[in-house]
Length: 198
Image 1 (cartoon, helix red, strand yellow):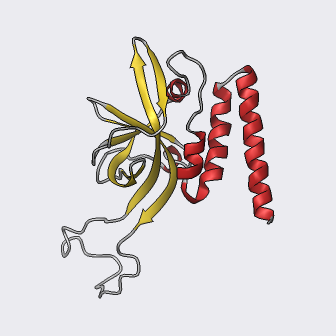
Image 2 (cartoon, rainbow, N blue to C red; image 1 turned 90 degrees about the horizontal axis):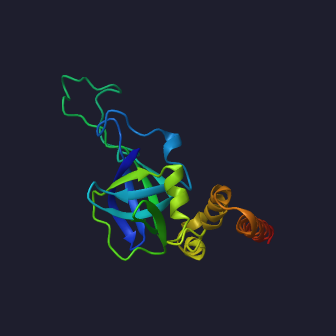
Image 3 (spheres, rainbow, N blue to C red; image 1 turned 120 degrees about the horizontal axis):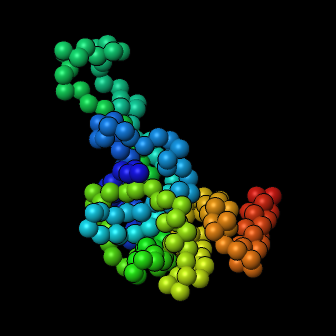
């Protein structure tokens, strides 16, 4: 499902998405569609640009603390026919790679994407099979090489983001790979807990 579009960036791998609302589409995304740690893809009909993770959100309301004069609490639609809603939901997204296709197989190229994603590029939620494909390399071996990148670029909630991602993707791995992810998640949780106690 489409979430919205790219409106600006904070860095080469940190993009801000403006969520679609009822003024943009008939069926806008609901709150459960774009939660913390959700995998998204930035792509047009012609090109796939990047895979990202939502790591923060902001409610934008320019009318907040506006001390200008107001006529009534409910404006008259005949008196203000061009009144539009200027509130938006903004999603901070860290780019973690790209999703490539070779023949009938898709695989992930994890890391910081080389290309700059243009403004107004549509952003979509990723299906479970796409998230699975992104965590396989070209030889269809499991991979999670963006771990350290998330710890550096995940903002104030980086450790919680990594922990949530590890919990989400551990079901995609099997055997020793899955056990290694479980150990990594428990170690990160332990470090986070001990850090809070200091």
